[in-house]
Image (cartoon, rainbow, N blue to C red; front, side, top):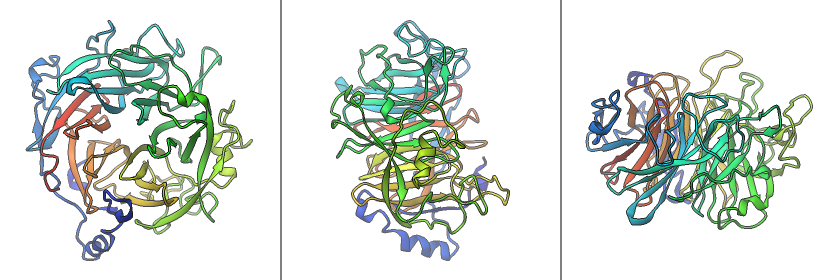
Length: 471
């Protein structure tokens, strides 16, 4: 994906206060009407940068500018696939979703997913596994105040396609399996969430599937700290958006194991909202179906069978099929989710106006915001059919200063794209070494460092600079 083709993005403004989230809309539409692009230079043009610790990296990466960043920003790189870890194993492949937690002595604890299936040359290893046939899981990293790696080890093993997940207010990471499958001749079921404590000495945790949170192609979760409710996305072409209400308000690791009730979002008065069978039966959307900035009232339908034995559209069996039979809204590939600004942001990575007139045409992505205080959703960002400035958004995070940062997983070169409070989009970082995706963007507790992964070849980086500068 070349910079020259990134010419337009339709988006709504966001702000730190939910009641003013859409306040820039009038100015935004005025710009569009004048033919102006609602973009910003952000932190400035991007240029190739070497990691500060480039001399310490493996030979094939030493002296290589891994990222393009604005001039004033710097970064370190560490915990690279194949490197030895403190538990005697080596770093697995498939770096993906991630979250940062404050540690002792100004350290940061990262819990990082590895999106692997049942075989890999660099698996997640360990003696405590959910399934001995699965090679995905998580690793935990301890990073010093100088943004150098102190320690890393595997923390969850034996799971499949740990793509994204989300942090909890009680210092755990919920790691999500993006699958509906079995291993060991069908004796072990997959498609669950697992909880991993953010602890520098946890070692491998006991892998307990959170069955009542649903068995489906999980992608990400976001927790509302005011209620403890867990919001979940699903990576399917006809995905739904879910809310898990725990039986007890969670305050510590293990509370989610006490179960709860699962619900799916429904737009009031619109059964299967966003199901467009005229132009786009794959739910990519249709120009004008929902306008950017439009707010829709929602309610929740209860899922009676959150842990089905199978998925069958014809039989109506499976979490999303039950949800849709009750009128639940449908989103084209739910991916990243994050709580911030009093909202739950979630991504439909192939939603939006279809890129062509083909029956199965996808869109280039949307970002939605659910307001739990008002029980409504708003379309915040929608990419143009050309994919200019945004293509296939995946992981999302909310910066401490309110901007959204979205990791692309498109074709060609991928970027981290920022959206400021004025509703302007800007490029913040570019993967300069591979066509693989950027993933797992998150901020340290003090807001001074962004951590992010390059999925291939598997690198974690720590980016820092003048975050408070006008964007």
